[in-house]
Length: 134
Length: 357
Image (cartoon, rainbow over all chains, first blue to last red):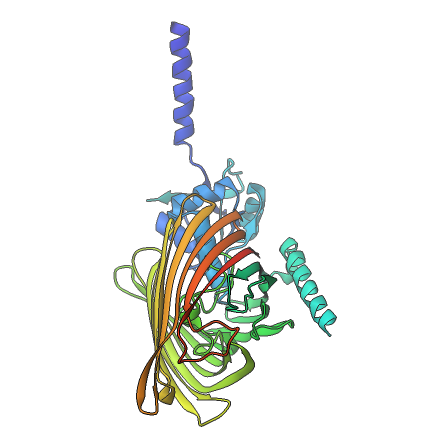
């Protein structure tokens, strides 16, 4: 009985830890002075309404893109793609560049001082993680 | 000649595919981007030919575009788009690849820019990006509103764009333009010149993400194949709501065609996203003309269309569309158009796949 209870507690603790862990980390270049941004500010940056930033997106089919899109834009990836297609094929604007892995996002952010990206894996020490406030 | 034109089509299609695979460009080309789409359809009508769709069906029904964009810095942009459109038996569209757009844009700041050249005309929701994969759930936007007899997809001239922040999370996008364009005619390959054209459009972006309200107007001098130049004055309004699962669009166009009478057109379409891949869309559209012939006023029921479309997104950039339509009016193309004729009903189906990058 004690073993069953211990197993239950262990499972519950693991599940709680997983639930508390963020689905993604928003990262910027180490030289950036920014320590936090609001959700609306991050959304505006990735919709390219803040030209001083250089956002980098992940592939549309990736889980981290779906999590990011839901959490930051409050919309599905399909919605965001429709938004960009309307602007691309009206000749009005281009979406952020897309890369296919967390490692590629990290490389991009390390290379560009005004870059901002998001990754699912644990961020390396040579980029800076910023807090996203509601 | 036909072989050569088909070869050009195949080469363009291959270029689209190759470009799709080669989006990661070397550093020295980092200011250069390529986008495109291919929309290929099979279409068949029940009895009468309509929109170039014959009763024995056609696969010669497509719209493809390849866009090259060069942004050397934040202040300057050059865009060139090549496009080919084929609409079955219709005289509209051609086997050859056309220069759809070619314009230079100068960004004076984050809010104001000027474009010059052949520019997509800012008119309503779908005029600028009508053929693109995810922007329209139907093969073509509502004919009644976007009929090329009264509107154009492009403008040869200049366009100024201004973005203005508003109170309480409202914002406004304003476009003003001047130039000329060509108006098309169904069943005829010749175009009609529309010159001294000027107009404006305003979009009010509401505090609700994805909901916007637009209005605009334009006028132009139209040179018909015979007769004297006439003055078209058109007013249009739009409501566009993309609420992720629900999508709703409605637009209205009201035109004074000088001595040719008046033209009124409108449509509403609604869609629901059942799953991340599958959505269903319905559309109802109407257009009417009022003309005066020998002192008698004539009410011409040009078109009443109803359409239902099933969309399946295999990937975020590949979309299958299966749509059925009923049209009551005077648009059948197997007889010359006659404004005194009784409206006839035509049903047609379009199955298409769209790929974009």
